[in-house]
Length: 84
Image (cartoon, helix red, strand yellow):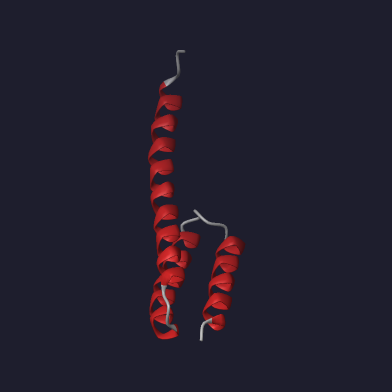
């Protein structure tokens, strides 16, 4: 199908943005898994700070909705509080 130049550019930009967004979402998921794998509260607190920072960064970029980011942080903090 024939696309105008502006449409072709939009397609190229959308592909780049999609790759970038998937990269950041994958980073967040990986860090969450690392946090959930910790067994002590002290180790969990260190990892949790990194997760919080990353979630906030991704939320600022608009990749995660701010309410989704807040929900993730809330869920992880509840998990940390349950640790002995």
